[in-house]
Image (cartoon, rainbow, N blue to C red; front, side):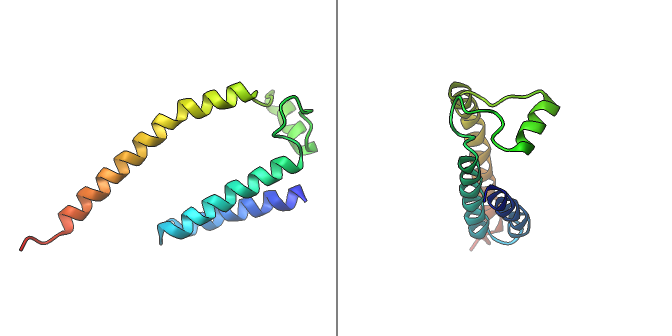
Length: 110
C-alpha cells in the first residue's frame, strides 16, 4: 500500500508542474494532496515514529546506507521547521509585493 501512496504523491508533483503555469488554486490543491499522501506513505511504513527502526522500507534502508544518513529526531525536525519558516515567509511576502506592483503598473490611469 505504501508504494501506491508514494507513486500517487509523485503523480501529484508531476501534475503540479503543469498546473503551476495555469492557475494557483489547482496547484495548491495538488500540493495539499501531495503532502497528505506522503504523510500517509510514511505512516504506512512507521517512518514518523521516533525510535522506529530505520529500515521502514527496504528502499529507504538501502538509500540510508548508500548516502550514510539517518532519520532526524523530533527535535531536529522542529529545528528545521523553525529555521525555515522565516525564509518561507520572506519569499511569500516578496511575491505578494511583486504581484501588487504588477497589478498597479497594469492599471490605466483615468
